[in-house]
Length: 188
Image (tube, rainbow, N blue to C red; front, side, top):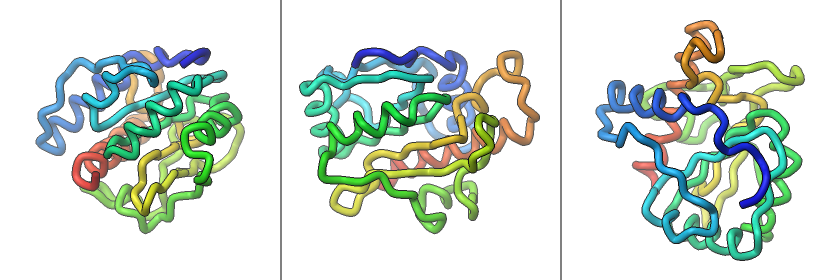
């Protein structure tokens, strides 16, 4: 995968992992791992998190590997960290040219795990005044890619010293992240 700044939000995943271990009784490894889209290492992980601010490009081989991973039961959460949208939509078309990103209905189980989000994604970080939206790619009826757009969950997962979001926003972000992980681990 070329471009982008996938290394953004360094405290986000460790905080989400700690939250899920505490609130959901999960036993997730406290250290996140890094796997590239073209690597066979992808298949070692049921959940992939992708974020960034801009340009991202999948090679043909990376798109094929990611497709095989997702078809085989993997799950990708793409979190728009502002500026990713116009790039990720094109790249996801390389992975699943036959599928369209659609807004995930508010009734979908991803919004109703331990924590209930009857109106979909919470708005965590303001960018352009647009509403937060959850988009998805469904392969044979299964949600394989969840794309949190104009929401910025990762900023809400960060240490308070990095983004001084109100505690209520941080809790909403962590709870929605926990729902995504819970859905991934119980629905795939």
